[in-house]
Length: 120
Image (cartoon, rainbow, N blue to C red):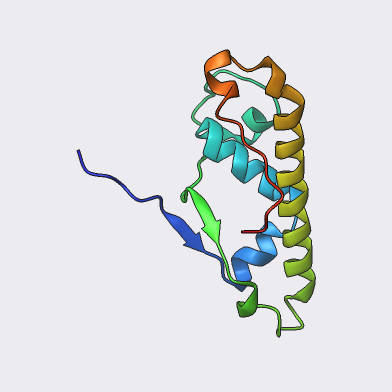
């Protein structure tokens, strides 16, 4: 079985505008982590619904972007700023949770945790 590459969507202006809202980023992450869901399923755990329920799924495993593609576009300055702050806040929350839970890890994983203050 060969190694598969993750499919990362290249963020364009349309996607950037959509992802500039923190709730949309959270919904997309839930779909990527937990798989397809209905709108009501994203809010509360429900059984698979009727034919009228519309199922949503993440098409890409992640997004990639270059700020240079948007930094000089005044129409995208706000969405770029909002998206960047959302991603930084989510990363900080994830790393804070990691630090809070590290002592609860199994012994075989504790020695794998390494902290450094180098920027390289």
